[in-house]
Image (spheres, one colour):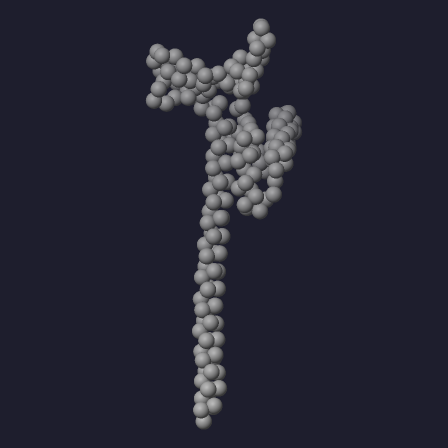
Length: 191
């Protein structure tokens, strides 16, 4: 999650929002806490529903979040998949996968795997939905910041062009006044 926050810091800085990774992490935790608080409140019978402005997008991200995820990536090569599992140590005390990135194990088989059933595809979609939504939000923010930067650059370019044109007009006026002054000075001395 901090990798996403790292990629958001620079675009936010360019947009004028000075936030560091710690601030973004705290904001994300507070949003999640408020979402869960609202969800618990609405889950109890007899309570009036509580409305929370960020509830809908957070429900899309956090609403169907399983505690353990199994992800299968389908591409041209159906024999490669990535499985995620809980970071529980084995009997010998080793964490499955590897010590550098616990929780991710690469599984490669040389046989072509049978087609995935419709139900597993649906669960796969639900499990990836939160990360896909976060990536979409990230791309939307980057796009918005890029557009704002482009508009600012165009406005700066237009300002510079106007400034240069006005400087040229001032130089032409100054040069003609200087030449007229020389003509007046040298024209009078000849008389």
